[in-house]
Length: 453
Image (cartoon, rainbow, N blue to C red; front, side):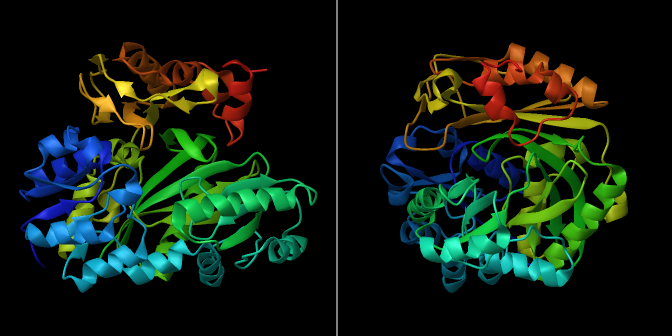
């Protein structure tokens, strides 16, 4: 076991703020990296030390491995926390950390490769007895992919093998549109991940997206911290998450938990991770992927269990065993999270960068807000539009929905357009309130002008 003397946070926005707070709780000094556009960002202000690593897009700053490694070494860091996005699931970066005697706070490069290659991960899950959606091996050309589609059949999903966050994904319903869909998805994959490896999966119609949060210790002990339903999403980007999922029974939930443990064990996983499943309307479920990092929606599970996942993630990286057992983990009530984005839903959800002129965030019992906003802060155009996460916990799902409506109603963000009103309408939608929203719900809801057709 090694107590970290100093940790570099290779992230920005609310997750960087969240990690810095966890480091402070542990008494560990933090080093913030930032781009020139983020010079006045909250995470830069809160960190004990700070260093600029580039300008403009993420490619020149938060994706610049050499600059980040150099900054960590110059500041005498023991470890790097990658947060989510950017380099958080990049095996090359994890390997570079190890080569420079820096602990990558996450799984090993080998594990990231195993689970990041979706085709390889699927095969591993099949061997471990975890149910998987019928799909193909890796393909690189439209001709290869079209041949592989004969096995999966239509409709199908085209996916980047090294993908995540909804990038490099396209639904395809016929052979006639296949080449166009494949070319677009592959182009996105190359731009986002610098890799053209793709694979195909059978498309489950009206699916529910359910994921299981795990913590895996260095001794092989794997804890399950419950499930989250992430079905309310747009272009594979989640908008609302909740726990527990209203779509599955306790019997199905327990089987899913057991399969999540099997998945993590098969991968030789350590740290915080999420095993994602897709479920149909008969509660048949299949392995989708494993996110080898902290999730955007980790706060949902923290509210539901009272466990600080980021803190535990850091402690695991230091080599400490768990201070609690599976039997001590309690999941009570119901938790809902709404992601607040600087965007214009009425104009196809286009980003809305700008300077925050007014800000009032909700509070009260069972309300949490994760954000890096402050009055006068300028939301840049170069990065993701997520600006806040509002999380509420209630005695049951109905109570949590009522509490979230109140929280959204209290929130004031001036200077940029946001999806607050759109989220508020979803919270009043009968489909959502009945717990029946699938992954296609937001599209039809948006096309109906925020009203059910």
